[in-house]
Amino acid sequence: MTNQTESMPRQVRVVEVGPRDGLQNEKQAISTELKLELIQRLGDSGLRYIEAGSFVNPKWVPQMAGSEEVFQRLQRQPGVTYAALTPNLKGFERALSAGVEEVAVFAAASEGFSQKNINCSIAESIQRFEPLMLAAKDAGIAVRGYVSCVVGCPYDGEIDPAVVRDVSAELLQMGCYEVSLGDTIGVGTPRSITTMLDAVASKVPVDKLGIHCHDTYGMAIANIYAALQMGVASVDSSVAGLGGCPYAKGASGNVATEDVVYLLNGLGIEHGVDLDQLVATGQFISAALQRANGSRVGLACAAAK
Ligand code: HMG
Ligand code: MG
Image (tube, rainbow, N blue to C red; front, top):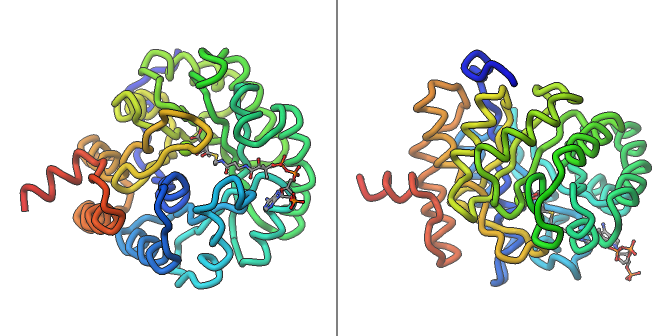
């Protein structure tokens, strides 16, 4: 077991997934203009990594059908990485011609979720990534990896941490620079997250890991705190807690970025995000989508004004 206090990072990279993980799950149509304004405001808030879309089959995830246009029209801010999900070579080629500068491949630690989400087994998904990884290398594009359902799966139940360990190691071995470990349905607790991270860290350096918590059971902040204590320094989150996964029934939004930033502020960990501007962005997108703001910190800060 890692010495937890000593391992807490001084600086954390906040990976904003709202425009992708957040918006992919909205039922209503969302205009490209609104997506672009959200991305712009997130950049203005100091976020330096924004997952802005995905190049999956638009029949599967209609909200992301406009990702080409989003990337083509994006006003890129200096120092900001705008990334996209790509499930296969076809997705990568679409992303490349839209001018995407970083992509992410996504695998799962459960066979049930892999089949439902990307229509293939875990092993087949890794095979599909191989030509993508080669093409990305040729194009000089960095690839991030995701592993979904790292503690629980809506189809297969509890997940063996050894599978998470092995899939993570495989993604890194094939060229991903970092693997984000996804509690897709938000069922983890600090104990199951710590057990899983211990297993993964036995084969993979902790500085190659990110944590991606959905907040279905309200455990995301506790789980992120547990991951920070183990030295994880890359945290995925979604402004106003937008989101969910269309292939994980009952999964609510990601942990809210505002809540993560408040936690990091309290811990004295650097992150570069302006909380006030971020809260305003959360209020803006919640109003635009006519949905309740899913950030406790966002609501508290807005009420205190
Ligand atoms: P498939 O049906 O197995 O693909 O889908 P296929 O290769 O057999 O092709 C079938 C059709 O799809 C063909 O078109 C292809 O051209 C087309 P047709 O000939 O029938 O007209 N196709 C594509 N079209 C556009 N872009 C592409 C593409 N690939 C094939 N890239 C596929 C496989 C992966 C494409 C499909 O299952 C899919 O799109 N799934 C979407 C999954 C998704 O986006 N899920 C949500 C994101 S993951 C997530 O949220 C979890 C995460 O946040 C982490 C966490 O929380 O744990 C990352
Ligand atoms: Mg997710």
